[in-house]
Each structure stands twice: as structure tokens, then as C-alpha cells.
Length: 153
Image (cartoon, rainbow, N blue to C red; front, side):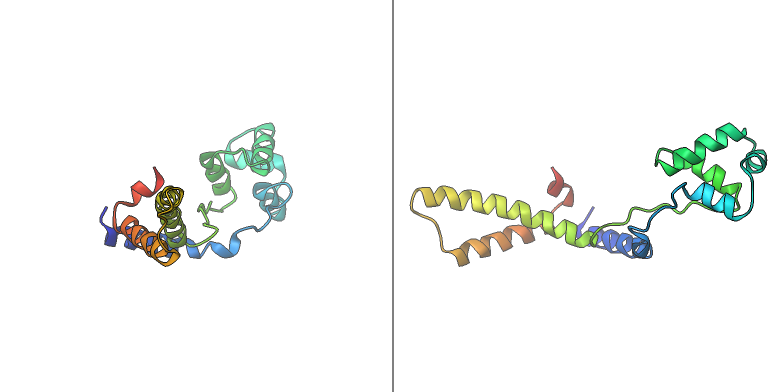
């Protein structure tokens, strides 16, 4: 993917995920969302199980699985549909994706340049800090201008 396309894809993904950021870290109800919604609607376990075509013990297990984070998305979607709900699924980055990419490029640039600078220092030929900083910045820019896949190898 070209650099402009990488940036565009990253910015579009960041924008799409931004709406979910306020939900990050919010607690899940103690018994899970399936149970919370079912009970809020006044549905018994048996009545809801009949509505979605499963046995009451199966629904009980599914609700427990959801509360423990072990339910599959497919099963959660099916059971949510039976509550006239939809599952909204997203990964919420802890920081903007652009920052993640730039931090990785900076890390790799520092490793590359400081490794050489260290070897030169052992030979009493270490360049000035300003020169090393400029080399790091140049390497970082080169990494960001290349294939981002190389940042993660």
C-alpha cells in the first residue's frame, strides 16, 4: 500500500473508531449484558429461551459465558437479536493509530542509529548528539515513507 493510502486508511479507521472511545473502560453489568437486558425487559430465563429457540439451561450457560467473556460473537448476535438488540463490535485503540505507527518508527530508528553510535563510541568516534538526533529523525522519516509492514517485522 502506498504511503498516502496508508495514511488515508489509518485516518479513516481512527475516525470510525473514535465514536467508540467514550465506551472504553466502561464496566459490563455483573451478570453480562444479555442477562441485564433480559431482566430489564421483565423476561424470565425460560420465556427468553423459548423466544430464541434454545433451552433454559442453554440460555443460562450462554449468559454466563457472555459475563465471563467466553461467548462467541455469532452466539451473542443470535441472542441479542432475540432481545431486539444488536451487537456493536469494535477495537478501541488506547491512543490514535497514527501515534502507534510513529512510535514504532521512532523505536526502530533509535535502535538502528543508537546501535551504530554506540559502536562508534567504543572506537572513540561517536558523532555529536545533534548529529545523532538528526540521523534518528531522518531514519524515522524514511521508515514512515516506506512500507509500514516493515515497521512490525
